[in-house]
Length: 493
Image (cartoon, rainbow, N blue to C red; front, side, top):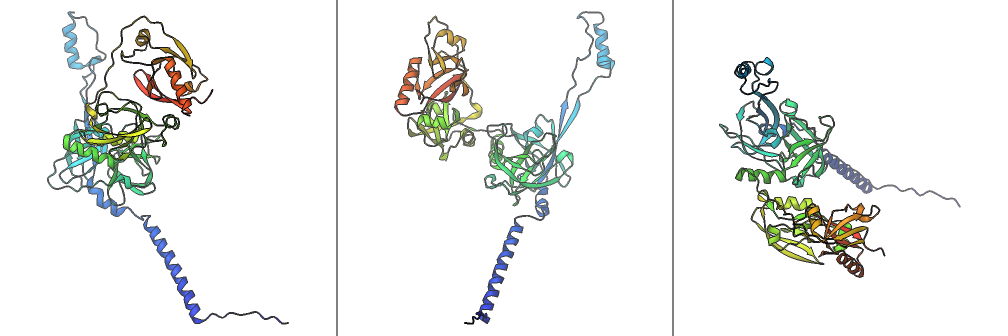
């Protein structure tokens, strides 16, 4: 049998359809390439031209007084040479030299205009201690500025100039909408070189450097000395950060710069503009983060929130908050950790009554707290207790050597007269307690969120926790008046 290959011949309709699909796929690829190209700007020139008139150079002058008295000869009071040497020093200064006059020290920085009537934002460290502040505009015009207010906590300062005509200004954007990888542009006065532009991307968000209210955007846009106080722009020309600091072993840019996020800055600027100072909300608690073992020891399903270690006199105490509570939400915002709570409370208006949800003894409660003002809050100083003669008892529990509270221990440890609990007199170095930082002299005030007054009380709390199926026990420990919670394992025999 002879086989014959079957040949398929495309019809004109089939050829047209094939051509249509080829063109369609090609068009889709072209559109994708164009869209991808649009996400990578070929130039920042239009953006730079748009915002340059609103960016300023800042020059500050400070009078540095000469140190008097150095090198002056010691002449006894009442000596016949006293008047002679006084006249000589007045004419010639120390060591026979002409007297040193006060000198002027200058510093450079950057800033940006946020209103047509002349409000200017910069860093506090740029203008701190300055006798004179000169703002130079892109046009070359110069105006003297006055300080409206400063906030060292966020390193932000608000200045005011008096222009003859309306100024160009920029607006703040929403820093929470800035994503890692987004293009950004920095402007300022690096190393005194005048108006300068650098570009990069958002490298990271939510960076904390040293302050309680830190929320920095990290960028690889070049930032150098003199850029401090200048704006960090997104591609819409909105300010999403104030360039503040760099991480560098050499003092120059290595691509790790930090800008305070605009959502922090706007709150500060609004308060400085209205009051001339900051007015942050104050809850009145000491807190620490919730760890895995702490969550397990109190029966908290999620490892989040802020654990209250102490409630001194203040708004939280008046609302019924207690040591051992875990703050899960504040004013409708979920609390992930202590840093987030501190920022949220600080950004809340003084005098506002907020709902605070806490986890307490296995259940949640909602408290209504009227916030005080952080700047007015002061720590209470505990009084020392008089000494008595008591014979303490000791017991070893979980690697801890514990003693009853006595008047002698109160005095030795400088504990207030209302301090109750058991005193740690020794800690086994191989114990978990030692690994978690407990030391001789610590005071254990609570165990399992219940007060303890003797080593026997602590042993009872351990037994109760074991019976309840707990693997760890939460201890409230005080050291030099500062409280913190520590969870110790108890599932061993």
